[in-house]
Amino acid sequence: MKRFWLFVNTEKPQAERVAKDIRAQLFAMGAYSVEITGSVLGEEIAGATDCVISLGGDGTIIRASHCIAGSGIPIVGVNLGHMGYLTAVSQENEIPGMLTALLGGDFKIEERMMLEGCIVPAGEKESVEGSPLRALPGEAAERRRLALNEIVVSRKTNAGPAHFRVSANGVFLNEYKADGIIISTPTGSTAYNLSAGGPIVDPVARMKILTPICPHALNRSSIVLKAEDRLDIEIPGEEGGVQSVSYDGAVVEELFAGSTVRVVESQLTTRLIRLNGDTFLTQLRRKMSAL
Image 1 (tube, rainbow, N blue to C red):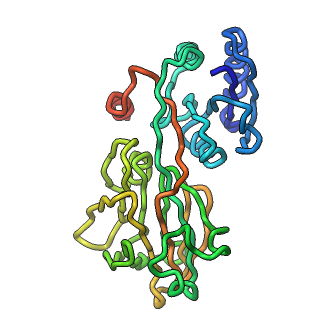
Image 2 (image 1 turned 90 degrees about the vertical axis):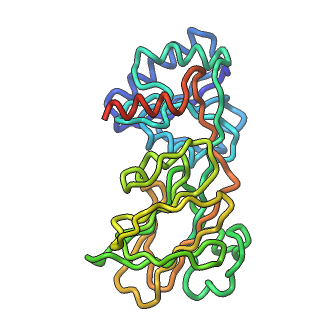
Image 3 (image 1 turned 180 degrees about the horizontal axis):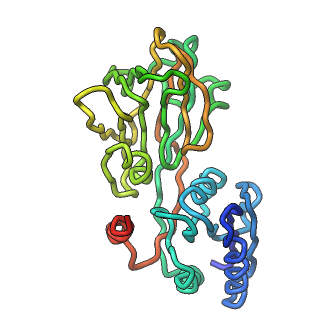
């Protein structure tokens, strides 16, 4: 690797200083080009970089992943935030070793699955029943959203719990009375899913994790499904108030009675760099002991 883009979370006070230090170190170590930016677009860096270095926290990596998903460009993270499950290093004194590994090829790349979702309005449901997401009409295709961690369907305006009717591959699975439903990737299993009592999953696995948020029932268990399974979360027609769907906690869209959120495995992936010698289990032990 010789060409780098530094994706900086400018809300972190030290981020710009750390970015300038990293740029100076990279040039001193033989890098050809190093760009610093607060935003990244796939078409900007296609063919112009070998690696994106994210400076911030897990949220910064997630934003970068949305921008360059499918480009094949790997991301490595420097944690300037709190837990940093997705980042490779968490201390400034670890950065020189990380840069040496990147320039020397001493690392491995993990392919992380992503989710793709869209809202199917009540009037379109019958016409797309049984179809995968990619076969939806063109208008629906424009509403597709990506998520690296999770897609969450939850109440928005009503004070009490909402009803959610969940189907898998067109077959009714369960109806939940809860504050919401989390559909998580393995990467997102240590995020909102974990806070809601869901299981921790090795992030390179391929599966979907369905976890209810504060369900009003004795059965609070998560359900683990195949990555290929298509999930439909329907807001029943008789449901009052307004619900919402969010993608990685950033993009939020309103839902109304009768509408359905359809979630499938995306054909795009995020490529994350893990330094050699580091494993998910050692990182997990480190992060959980810091709680």
